[in-house]
Image 1 (cartoon, rainbow, N blue to C red):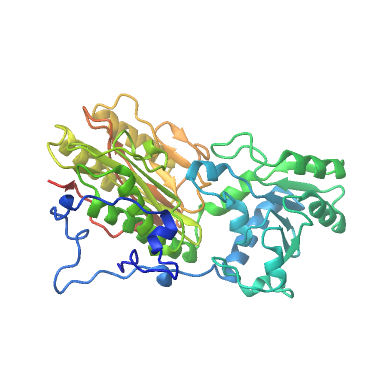
Image 2 (image 1 turned 60 degrees about the vertical axis):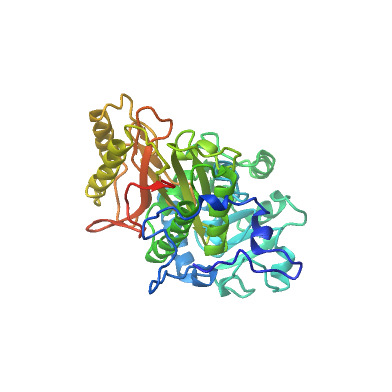
Length: 463
């Protein structure tokens, strides 16, 4: 991996300074510990695969968007919806440390619009105010790559602009009147019954003004349509998720390089974050590392904790490519002595991961799969197995399932094209942090395939 941390800007600020601010770094005395071959610096005659923003895909294809719209419209047809009105929402932003949180909008149009309108037939309409003037003048926007479908004469999509930032209802009302949807059935995205947000996230004022303007329209939640179309990924999406997994593993590799007894949590976190940004050019979807409990116990924040010998460091590490996240997990031992149960729990977790991989196949019940994992954990003495075993990849709005936890319903089955982080978690007796080994996998017609490339093994850092 190319090291860009010391490249200077005209203001004599490094890329690292610009991205995450200065940090004190890890003490030089911690360097030089034995590392596995995949995580140590290249030796003589060895090379490492290049990974940088230049190696990442730049935009979704027009064909990919049209595939999504076709699937959404098939769902609309089944629900007898004449139109969908889909808002940007912030639920997932709160959960995943992101500032956008617009899974449905990004999925449908790929630009930071406030609302998207999807009629059963005709052009998709994106209503925007944040980027309106830039789009109108056809000027480049840093970080946003637009396909020709957004040109003024595009056959598929139209961008309209609100008169004032955050004032959405007039444009929505005008559009619905133009289309004569006065007595239509209209689905509303994010209205209710979202995963991890039962009461939805639609802005009340906007929705209320639209409802008052159309008293005879039947409005219903369209959340079910909008998550189901994302459940099975296209070949193009899977390729992007594979790249996102590369970025996640770049974060894990950096952790292996710098995490040692005596290192500061904040320093390790910042180095991992920087490595992931430098790999893809995007903010990570999720980066949480912890010795206090499971990988998410730090809630995605850098802390002032000092790592101690004998602790287990866990993580949720999810890079981002074109806004799609793909999580990986790899518990490690810091120094020595290890908790007495570390080797046994770690090996059990690794064996369980491979056992579960072999049980993934299209048509198989996800509930039965999770129940099986629960029984395996009970056999090791876990009284109440729980947590997330399956963490869906993509825009973070899909089901997360585990023993005793079935988002999406008990009838959910594996389908070819599903991508998720499979991450069994095995408690370590006498330690707050469990053994957790996970990797993003894709369901194929023949079973499951890992997207990650690292070796899944027990590791001790700084011994």
